Image 1 (cartoon, rainbow, N blue to C red):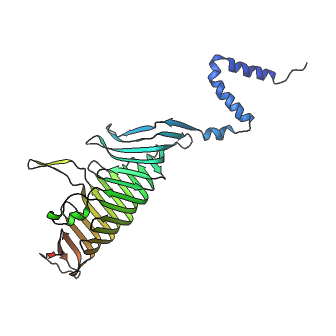
Image 2 (cartoon, one colour):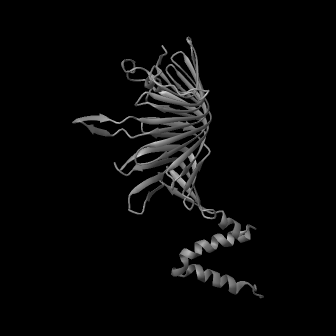
Amino acid sequence: MAKFRGQPFLLAWRGFFRHPLRRSGAIICRWMLAMVLSGWSIVPALGRATVPVDDFFVPFFDATGRRTWDVGGGDATVDRESGCISIRDIRVRLFDFLENSAFLTLSSPQAEFSRDKNCIVGENFIHVVGHLFTAVGGSWMFFGADRSVVLENNVQVFFETNLAKSLAPDGERGDGGFTAITAESLQITGSDDGFVLEFSQNVVVQASDLLLSCDRLVVETAFERPVAMLDKTAMDEAIRRIIGDGHVRCEESGRCMEAEWMELFPREGLMVLSGKVSIADENGVVLGQRIVVRKKELHVLTASDGTVHRDICLEME
C-alpha cells in the first residue's frame, strides 16, 4: 500500500503541537496555516492589526516631574502600523502648576491620538470647560507641547461675566450676566496665570446692551485667586484685556463706535479705539485717530487732522 508523500510532514506537525513547550506557539501557527489555506495574505493582515485597550489613560509630565496634562477614555484601539490611538469618549485635562489641579477639561465622543506628535485630532463635537468660561465647537485639535486647543466650525464661548457692565459707571455696574462670543475658529492657550483665547473669522460678541464684531479678537483671562491689598483680600478680575482687530464695530448704550483697533480693560472700565475712529450717538458724531472711552466719558487724544486735544470730556448718555 502506497504511503502519502506528505505523511512525514503531518507527523512532524502533530508532534510540534503535542510538545508542551510549543503549545502556546501552536495556536499562532494554526491561525497562520488557516489563513494560508483560505487564501488570505498574512503580511497585510498583520499590518492592519489593532489592539483594543479598556479604560485608556496616559499622563504627561515636564522635565521637573510636574504633571502637565493627561488623556483618558472609555476604550481605545491602537493601530500597530500608524501608531495612532483611536479613543472613544475622550477626556483631556490641563493642570495648573501652582495649584496642582486641572484648570481646563475638554471632552469629545471620538478622537485620534498620536503620541509621537503629542497631538490629538477630533472631527466630532467638543466641549471645553475652563476658568469662568465654557466653549463648544464642531471639530478640534489639541497640542500637548503648547498646552493649547484649536476649535473649528460653529465655535461658541460663554463667559460668566457681562462685558457691557465694564463700561458703565460704578454705580450701574452691578453683578450677574454673561457674555457670548461666536466665531469660525478659536485657539485656547493655557498658562499658569490664565488663558489666552484668540478668535478669528466672523467674530461676534454679545452681552446685555452690547454688540461687538471684528475680524479677530483676543481675550486674556486671569485665574481668580485671592489678592491681598491693604490688609484686605479681593479676587482678581476674570478678564484682564480684550483686543479687537480689523473692522471693529461696537454698539453699546445707544452709541455706535467703529475703529480699526480696539483694546478693552474691563477692570478699569476703559476702552481705547485707534485708526479712523468714529463714535456716533443721538447728539452727533466724534471722529479721531485715537479715542479713549472711560465708562460714559469720551476723551479725544488725537483728531483726524492731527490736532491734539487735551482735557476734552463729553458725557454721552
